[in-house]
Amino acid sequence: MSKTINVPLLNVTIRRDAMTITPVTVPPSELTLLRQMFGKENVTEGDQAGVIEVDPANEHERLTELVEKSAVKAKTGKKAEAEQTGDATAK
Image 1 (cartoon, rainbow, N blue to C red):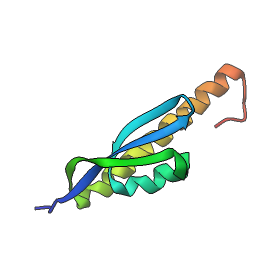
Image 2: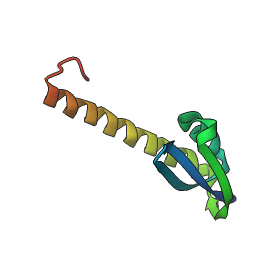
Image 3: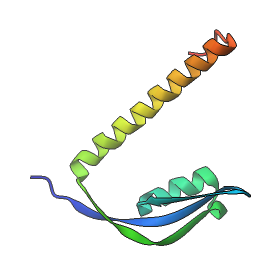
């Protein structure tokens, strides 16, 4: 039997540009990544939105699958774009 842990979720807003602000709900561990991606000044932490239960034993596998799926989509997208533009160097 796996033991789950409670992870808080935070309301966060991300300012992408002067006209676009995106609200998201994320665990605190993702704030560092968001700040690196969008800039520290563009990520505003809000109130706690709730709590989720996470099984640490399965979390690594779940995240690995998501990263692999994203990589496949990115690779497929580059290949399709290359076919449309006639770029033979894209893989």
